[in-house]
Image (cartoon, rainbow, N blue to C red; front, side):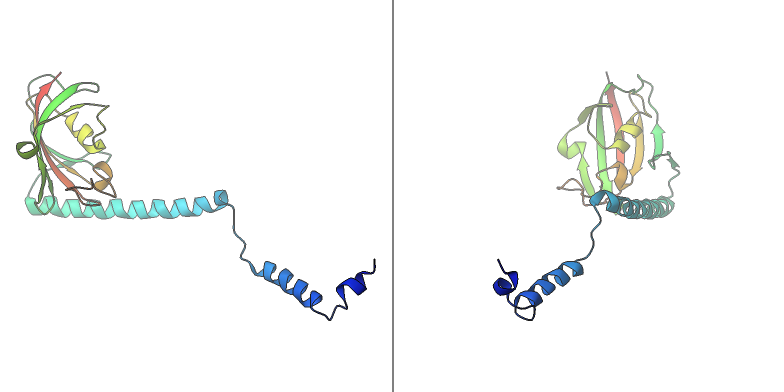
Length: 181
């Protein structure tokens, strides 16, 4: 078989077409595999999270100052003010705790309260409630009362609860421990 006869001379349509295909393929951007892209993306996300935590901390400190509250901060970022520690059994992991509460935004907007929505009961360590609430309740005993300020990463996070708590909300919890079992 004579290829020259079949394809024609290089100056015909076949040669330029083949050349265009090869050149077009070379122009595609080189994409790294996802495993090689992730570290850069993860580093950016970590920096964004660090920035947001610092900003949340600043907002909370300003709020506490305006309110004139004397609060302490845990390593995780939970702010707390224990008004009454309580004299009953201590709240420890695995205990069932009944409590009354008020949850509000920093601007004073009431989100939830036991007066409206009823008291809550949780089993510490297994409740699925925000990490900040669990950490705070573990500081108390039956009969205790405390105020907690939870930055978004300890409360409802980036999305809120989809109902009354908006995205990235810093929350003020007031908690009264009624019963520890």
